[in-house]
Image (cartoon, rainbow, N blue to C red; front, side, top):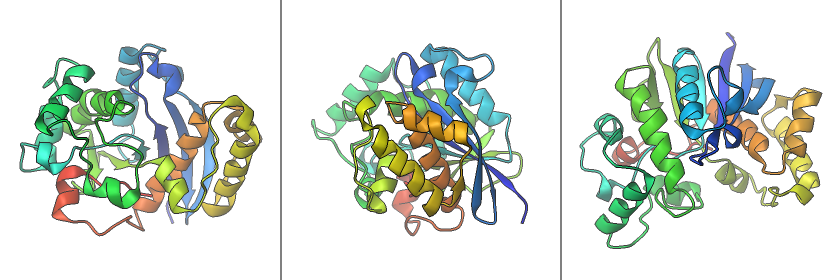
Length: 264
């Protein structure tokens, strides 16, 4: 079987996104993962700590790898009740520049939902932690769609499943949620914060067995020592992205084709 490049992206919409976004690089052959590297987005060419620099660099990085698969930890869509377009591509491309910023995006969603935090069908099925415009997630959703996913779809540098078919010359984007992947597999141990090093080590060992995934000693040590768990999440994201190609999380429905689908 031909090897495939699969990347896991633990996304962030924070002002210092360059140090919060982590990327895991893997090669997959016959279902076996070989991790090549794991690093923050600030290390990408032309990147930096500032959100604008990091997101532009990430977008360029994805578009420059047309044969790769990217599992990105960010909502690819909104609940159908808040979508005006009839198809996801129109939604994603028209999202770009629609709002004056993340706060306007959140306020607009809440206004249309009468103050409620609506959830997508896939959020309920995958047991994701929050609504796409929840206080803890709205910046991530906004910047993911406005600065990365929407532009990539608009210029046909990428396609997103299950809303679009995979196409030659375009990177494939897959929505993932590391927290949901762990819950789905019965791994419920808190691992974020400095004192939870042992928990991160156990999750890394679980990844080695479950995926299966070969992780170099330096990457393993980096993931275990990272107090925020971002490196661990990037590795989980890569595994979920590859599984999406052969084992979809749920049968694709017309709702998934508009709202998006989380793959575990």
